[in-house]
Length: 191
Ligand SMILES: Cc1cn([C@H]2C[C@H](O)[C@@H](COP(=O)(O)OP(=O)(O)OP(=O)(O)O)O2)c(=O)[nH]c1=O
Image (cartoon, rainbow, N blue to C red; front, side):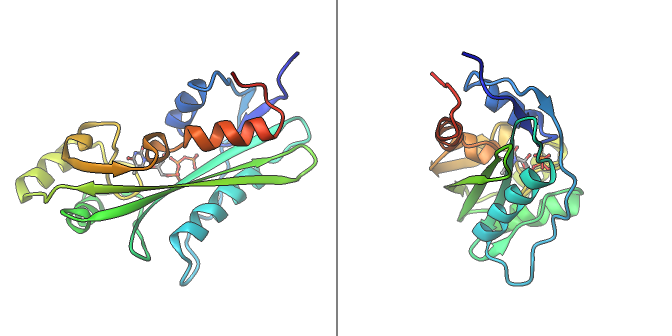
């Protein structure tokens, strides 16, 4: 029996790779271009959920299910930006240094009839206390570019992370446990 068609609404190669680990190959990739500005006072978890939902809905199709995700790094109620320049990445690392923070990874699946299913993964991540030299070396690596919170756990940053409680794949961008459950609930045949 064939699988329903699955469209991945993401430009992120990491999300594609993580999805492949579930044995799922999207029939199409359709990145959604939405306004990613948090609303005033919006809580990190609500923001992550709204972004995933809006990406899935923007790419919605009668030809198949549409899967989207959004990953947000939160320090308390504060939503950290996606680091696009060195100054932003440095600020994020200074803020995350020596303390725990949360990574919220929301996924949304829009069915061909327009109905929506969602899941959220929440992970606690703790960085060691970073020396100025460690921060500068990390900035020089360039691995922070385009990453929420200014780091990528899947690279050298993991050597600076003393503890993680939750979902490693969620921090990278697609929580595999929640994604598998979501796809199964929609009728996908996943081993
Ligand atoms: C914290 C963290 C984030 N990230 C990435 C995951 C996401 O790609 C990015 C957060 O931005 P997102 O808006 O979630 O995703 P994206 O813009 O890369 O892709 P798209 O919206 O098209 O699906 O940060 C890591 O790769 N590793 C990490 O450790």
